[in-house]
Image (tube, rainbow, N blue to C red; front, side, top):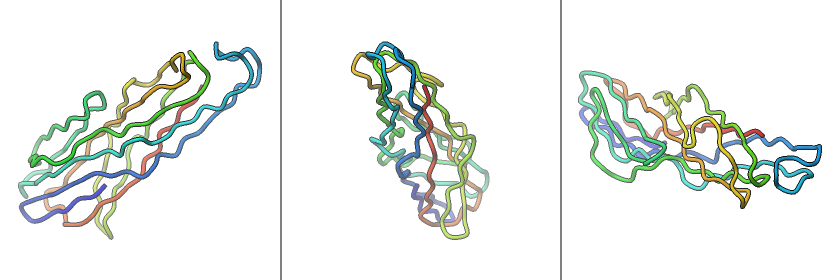
Length: 168
């Protein structure tokens, strides 16, 4: 996450590092309909979450929210949208064909710039909470969240990492 905050303006471009994923191995054939045997479940980051350029009005807190289905940004409270690149985080999940899996997202993440911080919470995914790998053994998962901007948020480049966990 990167944000440039001023007394009257907040410029933010959100970049998240690759998510950490857990994988479980199915040990008893047949496992799912992927031909039996064991196949690890993996997740790969394809696109970082981006909040584009934001500005705060300096009198009330505000938020910016990324919708996981569309990648669009909405702002509320004392946050203004000045455009820029906006996207949900995107991942590819691979494993046994036609097999269901669960998606676990964090509750809250702190983004830091030196001693200053902002919070990211209300994580949501598409699909929401679980998915089913297709006949290719793959499925795209997108993730959005809500960024909280303080009244007098200091200028800086804010960064943070969140974990997306997938399990059979």
